[in-house]
Amino acid sequence: MPIAQIFLVEGRDEDQKRAVIEKVTNALCEAVAAPREAVRVIITEMPKTQFGIGGKSVKDLGR
Image (cartoon, rainbow, N blue to C red; front, top):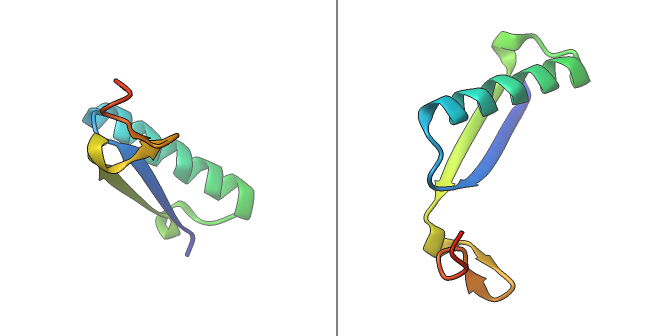
């Protein structure tokens, strides 16, 4: 059973998250010949203050 964990900075809407789940599922089915019903996708959203790039939070970078 393939499990994919995706970390995203907060701010995506439900349609975007659905698209991520669908596309990651399709990629795993193709890459490892996994049946769709066996694929698990976990999306973890992070607040912009809890993710940093180059020593600054994403929020401080204005992203």
